[in-house]
Length: 408
Ligand code: HEM
Image 1 (cartoon, rainbow, N blue to C red):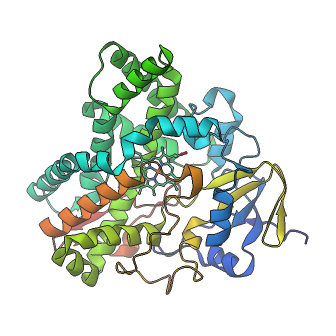
Image 2 (cartoon, rainbow, N blue to C red):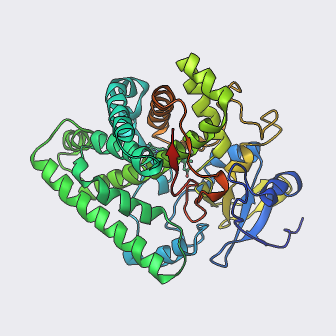
Image 3 (cartoon, rainbow, N blue to C red):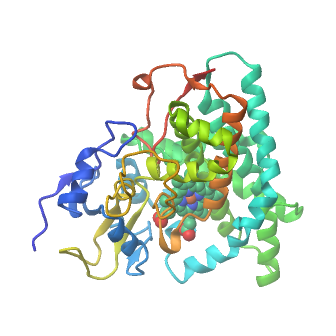
């Protein structure tokens, strides 16, 4: 069947709590559809939970972001890719099998449930310190700056063995890397932020090679020395760059959105306060409900593949609408309702298949500790301004809130 005429994509959310209704309509009426991206090139958008799982688990779809056909949602992203000197460091996110498996297995042991249990007391301490500072300071306070950004930033710095004094530097640079601004200025900013970050990480790794400490990067150095007799610094710059950027803005956005949502839902709040075990299912529901990594799941077909009643041709780009799929009525009953008792872990907020989020156990743990502690220590936390006045992010790879003034 011939492809439908291309529609413009993406359409930003108009309601902060739901995907745009035009994207929802696609799931019902054209679940595999052709769209035109801001860069002017075409790609397929897929919107059904089952199709997305199929594509993300299928080795005929490549994650190689270096391919010119790779679909990019931001104009700036497209421009970056067109400039060889701005090439991203080599990261597992953009690798295919078998290279991807090797890179992922090298670091998998750092994100097991056991490692997370070891990290929990320190995460609790970090969260308590930030909330102490909030309680001691003036009201209203911006929850994004006071809690949402510093918690994941402190945790990832500590995990990697990056001095926390430098966290401001990371926060600003990684925010620029994931920003989807338009025009040459945004491109230049993202490009120089990326270069500054990789330059910094290169010097840091050089220092660690001389003086190993007890952290993820030192263990990677040791592992490489034992396996190969040498260290591939470019490889470790790529790994640390990816972990810093991937583990930072995403979790921060979820903290801010989750705090806002829970502050507005008295039932969920009471349930978590009475039973701290409810924090885990609440986090799962928040992940599904907001699906913040909404423009991240992209692939290129390497062979012709039949999907629904369309043929995706080799070389075609595919974008997975995980936020719409996470409200697929075939999978989730009453999908637009926020229900912490839902118990659904089959959402696609962390993707699916071989690239499924490596840091998901860490993200879950941080979010559980944050919401459990925040509700216990500031039970009457609320937005200091009406929700309509909040500025939600429409210009980044991950959905979130720019600023969340709160009071109690
Ligand atoms: C991959 C979302 C937190 C590290 C992914 C993917 C998604 C995602 C959707 C799949 C991308 C794809 O298939 O192309 C999220 C969300 C987070 C979060 C929503 C927070 C709520 C973290 C954290 C870390 C992390 C805390 C690490 C410290 C990674 C890495 C990958 C990844 C390394 C690439 C995995 C691979 O290619 O094998 N994430 N992430 N993420 N994430 Fe996360």
